[in-house]
Length: 297
Image 1: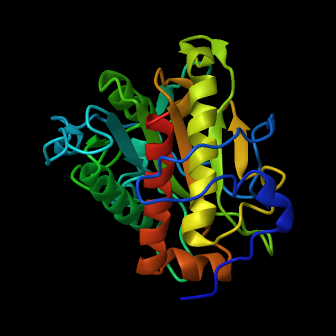
Image 2: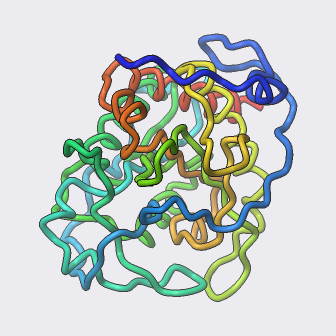
Image 3: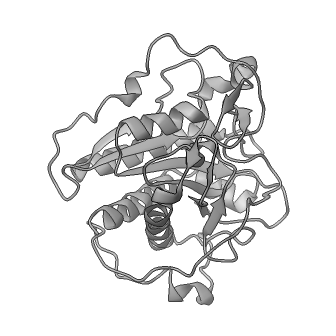
């Protein structure tokens, strides 16, 4: 496993703001406000990369069924939707995933194939692996967990359906797992995407902005603690947070939701971490701790 990135000292004022315990039930102060616009990473956004028209699957994905374990533990009574970004089958259904769908304020592609490391480790494979780890950890803490997809459908779901799954579940939190694909040299680190206050068309994120920010702040802090990786050095000004108003998965959400870009797949050092199973487990633990801290108040 490659060495983890060193956390800059300037981040200690907020990212290392509270002691970590296995239950993730510590207390801390909020991070500084971030109002960054849609962020250009040099590669497609978490939702868009390649496109085309799609027929919806004939039956709903079994992955949207409730978690498999009885609810007991610190998250008993809480529902979390985990959204593995992209779908391994999308690459075989480019015509379908290029179909334009309504994302509230505009129309965009149903989904994308996602990015990959330079040696071919696909983002869709990474996100599904981390999503499984995160699901298991949350279930162990008593949460009811639903996945938006489990590699159990030919492609998708489209970004509007991903949002709808979380909304219909009345989820207490939704976390969409991704990895970035910036090709610029030296771009490293994770960042958490938060919804901007969007009000227009079919989108109104105003009721979820504050809770989503708190969820994102806690996940960012716990990711540093669990993985030792630093927040992005190219998005978010060192905070590990980025605010976006162009992502349908956020714009159409009526429940607290964030996207976690776990690292840059095109950077050799980040790629080595993302391909390491031990690091992926630590990343899942960081997300689980952040979710737990947020939901326990």
